[in-house]
Length: 124
Image (tube, rainbow, N blue to C red; front, side):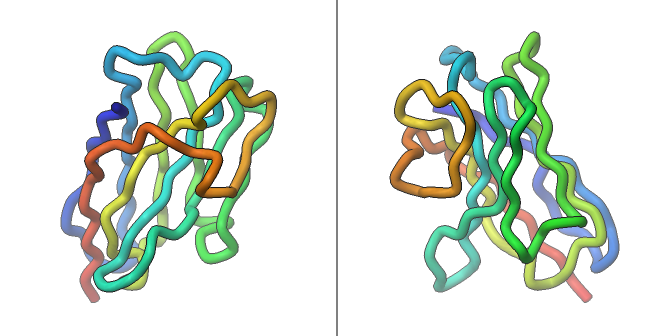
């Protein structure tokens, strides 16, 4: 399963960069995404990126503040989070599509192989 890192406790307006390593699997030919789960809520889509890196989708709530990118040589996907807000507080999960994917998707059902998550807490 993917391995996430980079979470932590920050103040509103700060930045964090989350990393997701394939950890023994591969991201080759798969789309990779980030979902988050705030306390008491369901998993929400945050961003996803195609294997080629040419296509990326973002949730409206993070567009313009978050950037997803990938390093194919390192089999790693990143989520750069800027201008963090308290409402960004959640556990962030890295996910890979269940099968090879030419583009990318926002659909949770298309993703399998969830990581354990990394916690992000944004205080006022």
